[in-house]
Image (tube, rainbow, N blue to C red; front, side, top):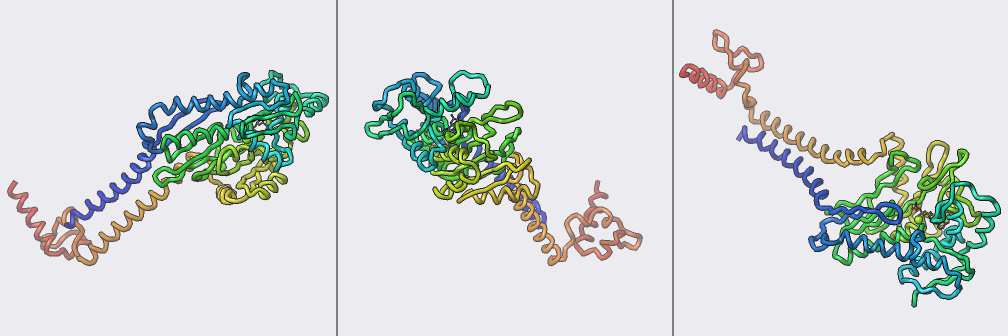
Length: 435
Ligand code: ADP
Ligand code: MG
């Protein structure tokens, strides 16, 4: 029994460690991941515990759904509903899909709530600043050009009808650009597609806009919030989300530089120019990704003060990173206040905000539990030895096994060997003689 105990405890500890590692690996193995490109960026879909039925053809169906979004809302595709609407100078109702009407309707709601900071009629200005499909060099536009394009802009010049789905412009040269909201809507469409196929635990991301449902065997899906300006994709923080969406807009994401000055693809429709305030990034947590995407852009246009006020007034969960010299000042509302606190603690302790660091920290609980298990087993063994007043197995060999002429042991630690030791030594020396 004495010998079995340490073996048994080692086995228990090994089994425990193996179980911890295997369960982490098991979660990874149970995820079906699909990647691709869409809307000028990449997408990623992860399904936890996808059934075989779901796995069959799902990649093809996801691509088809994303193509359908493009066919409706792309400004790069000449045949899309939006491109055809933009090319038309009719001020009559223009029939569109239910989805396009839904997206335009929500865009109008955000425009009204932000007094036009978010405005899908900003397209002509986006083109003028070389961020749209119109071919242009990155030369800065003139004052006259900006004023001319501003005449084409204004969400008040557009109307939307849900049934039958249609949109209408009140000025013939009005154009719409759904780039600030279509990716989020695309994410929602894929989540809906997967849900219809019976998937309960999914993670869908298009160009950084994310929505998740369920979890991974009790483990939440994690979303990384990127450190603005980071060349190495370093993360500000990793945040667990459940049954919700997260989108980020930032002035550092798509910009060009002229004479040392950056020009971002986020345009303030009130000035006709790219934003110039110090708000580097805006992250919004919402129930669906269309909302998160639209609000992230809207608050990005509004800037740190007005943006924070709009987030509070509309009960949004928002994290803002504002440039302060070489560093960023974080401000947050609602649930994302916890992210602000977490990243402040991280920066105080100078932790490296990288995904790898996150992975190592995931192992810390396993290591702590293993160490505790070791300590408990060692303590139990020590207590056993103390109360049993027995020599530790094996101490009858070595020095303790050699004797002086008078028969006493040469080992000072074993000066008073118990009967068991004497017996064993006699048996050992009898065995040696027999050889
Ligand atoms: P990202 O594509 O990096 O996620 P956004 O969601 O913020 O960024 O979308 C940026 C795009 O939105 C721009 O490229 C432009 O087409 C469009 N856009 C720019 N300014 C505005 C605005 N004020 N309101 C609505 N859409 C805008
Ligand atoms: Mg957006």
